[in-house]
Amino acid sequence: MVACCILDALHTEHHYVVNAEDASLTYEMHFAAKRDFENSDLLKMFQFCLRFLTNYEHNQQKQRDLNHVLKVLETILSWNFTKTNLPKRVAGVIEMEATPTFKPPNSWLDTINDDGFIPIFFNVGATIFAIPFCIGLTTKC
Image (cartoon, rainbow, N blue to C red):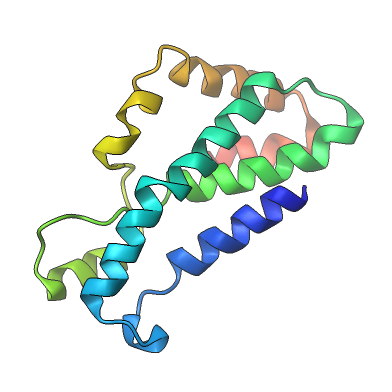
């Protein structure tokens, strides 16, 4: 649970620093840092969530952990990934997009193209549909 809170804090820091001037960064530095985060740390967070969900077996003690992991996963799946080779003005507007599509960088291909990737979501969906506190989450995802 502590790990999920740390992951959530890391994600929040990188997700909401839209105005690079607030952090004393140039746009180029901001987008470079965000791209690096997406290619390494965000991918590791995503893989952690997938591993947790793959190995998840429902019991009362793990319900809170599941809730945290699903929250982190939902945030990653709705992450507004940095687009490459865009003018500064356009990139800033796209970064503030309200409903981004899931278009991760090429560094994520091995994880996404894995044969077990899609079945994880179907298995988790079936599992959490039976858990009363998760029903609201299943309709959101």
